[in-house]
Structure formats: structure tokens, C-alpha cells
Image 1 (spheres, one colour):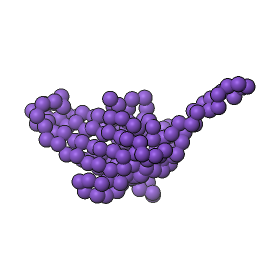
Image 2 (spheres, rainbow, N blue to C red):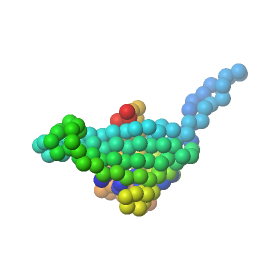
Image 3 (cartoon, one colour):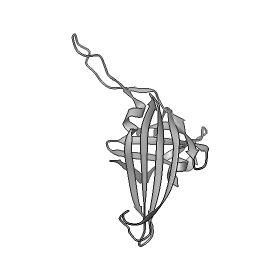
Image 4 (cartoon, rainbow, N blue to C red):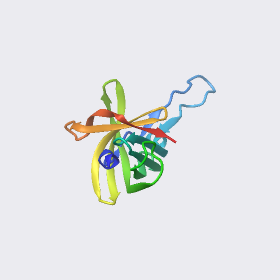
Length: 161
């Protein structure tokens, strides 16, 4: 299950700062918390063979400024390429900590440490990039010296629901 290897990292930068005014009487800049943009439900559907599909669903809940709990579900559909109908399901729970950022090509991505609680406890490191309503995670085929992916997996993109 891709989400298991993707989300076993825990941490990222604590805050991002939004632009704000600076003149007299204007409001001070608003601090945006890194974890906030992940909160909610994200899905990805992919065709798996000639008459099958897999739907991956991530649900994030903020637990602290740079931490989230998550539930991941992978549903396999054997008679549909549309992620619909009768399925079998795998579930996973855990937590994520946003630990910092790094640059991949021209993108600044967040480094995340993932702690997997169930069904099999473990940990992992990953990267994440949210652009609008899409979430891309790292491609774990090549890792840097600190154990984080060196590229994004552009074929495995989640959409916010």
C-alpha cells in the first residue's frame, strides 16, 4: 500500500507566513500553520489492469501546529475501472509530523516523518507538495542522505474532496 511507505515520516516546518500589509492601521501578517492545509479528505483512483481499479483515501486531522493523525484506506475493485462497486479494503492509521522543507526541481516540498500505528507499526520519511487541491507525495525509489525521497511521484496524485 503506497500510503504506508509514503507516510512514515513525522515533522515539517511549523509555520508559513502569509503576506500582509505593513502600513499604519493595517492588520499584522497572518501566520499559516503547516498542518492546516492537509486537514480533510484526499482521494486517488487508478486503473489496475484491464477491468480493475484501486481507490486510495487519506483523511487528515490536525493534532498540533505541525502534526496530524491520519487514516488511510485502499479499496480494490475487481470488476470496475471507475473505483466503484464491490471492493476489498485495507486500512491504516498513524501520525505525521512536518519536520522541514527541501527543494525538488523548482518546488519547495515539505519533509514529513510518518509513524504507522496499525495494522503494522513502523515509520517512514516522505515529502509532500500541496498545490491548490492536489497532493503529491514522494517517489521512494531514490532517497537523499537523510532518507527522504529525491523526486515527487507525479503519477500518484491525490485530490482534495
